[in-house]
Length: 103
Image (cartoon, rainbow, N blue to C red; front, side):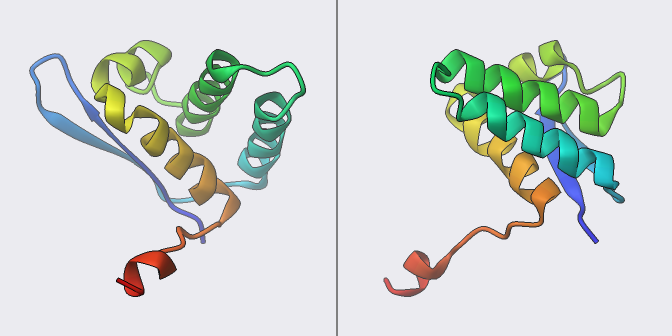
């Protein structure tokens, strides 16, 4: 069973963990639609970021997970990794740590 997790910082600077314990098939469909947007011929980084944010907002379906709370609640250097993790978790793709094991 897929579980999706997103950690955001609230206005007080506190970390708040949002979890979706069950992910339905509709979320997979949304992730595939997100892929189409991200990998379209004319897609730029802004389009890709917007698609990932839109996916996270739709999947969590929580008033505390919005475009603004995501953009204001994740440090810039973590933003794409955090959103990509949501995307990968929805699709059931596990992170490949094999390169870390070789070190």
